[in-house]
Length: 152
Image (cartoon, rainbow, N blue to C red; front, side):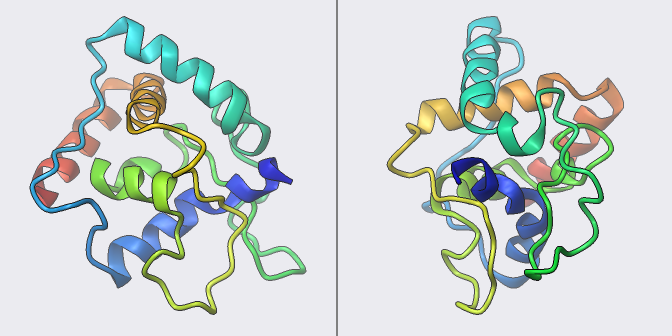
């Protein structure tokens, strides 16, 4: 069940980024640190235990992730360069993981993505984002860094 709950992270990121203001407290700077190998390694472990069951061991997502299932929900999108996770600033990604996509969205939006606030610490969320970003090609990391920079 927890694995299915992770399915909507990236799809919901689009909605969160467009439909609401960022949930991170004012002044907080969320930035994954790819230069810290311990952080990336910790993030790989967190990803394996909390994310891979839906988003795939290689960040590949579920098949046909752009097509709604019979229940109206989207399958888990990829977090690799073929998905759209990198299209969103770090703050938005952090908040989706921590607070869930429904934190400020209309209650009619249904997703399988769980709220990780009581499961993962802020440091673990930073670590998993560091791991995901470490798997992207350089050009994608640079583009996502620019998106995050504009959002600050």
